[in-house]
Image (tube, rainbow, N blue to C red; front, side, top):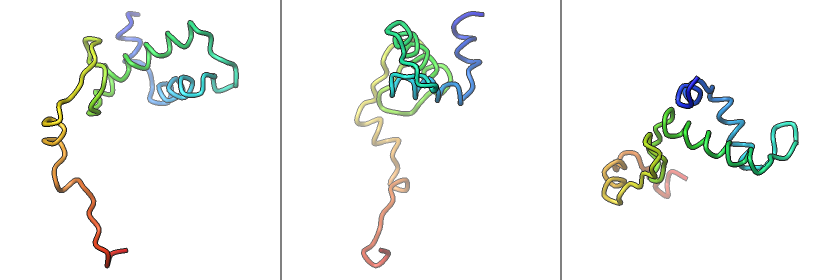
Length: 92
């Protein structure tokens, strides 16, 4: 199985477990990640974000492995005025 196929076969739960391991530095059973495991887990998470999630976040890793940075104009264009919650003092 090639790397891209491996990444595409990960379930969302497996991805979340890897993300949690990176955030805490430990596997779900409490065992600490080794330095090699940290590096490999980071690579796998970034690949999943690039190939599967195709995130609309301003800073992501693209399918080519390069960092994707959206410009301010691109972000403004994606945020329509209707997507912002507005509250009146009377509503609270």
